[in-house]
Length: 126
View (cartoon, helix red, strand yellow):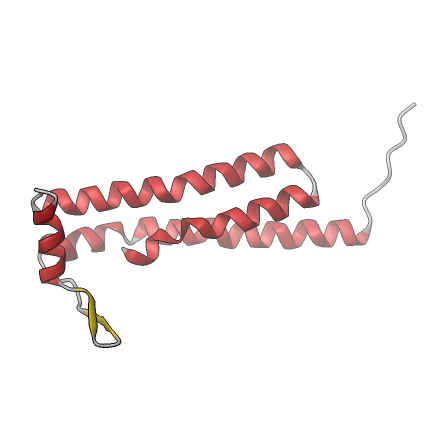
């Protein structure tokens, strides 16, 4: 005969906390995916806003054009290249985290997955 122990309040609270964190972390990449059309438009029309930190230009129209020419790509090809690269970099940690959550079904699995999720922060560059 199998004896089951009902979940405690603490277990339910942890489950709710991890569910909220997971929802937030799933929304973050979705916002990144939603920004792809505007990124593509900015690159192809050369309307990338210049970003300067500590007197050094981090990104500008000229810098984007230079990076595209260094790779032998047009601006359209470069935008697609960056989008595909960014999506791949985002989906790898998301997939690993989803597999951990699916397999682990315990507090440790949830904590492990949430520690992997921030690795998909590459959308900050788009």
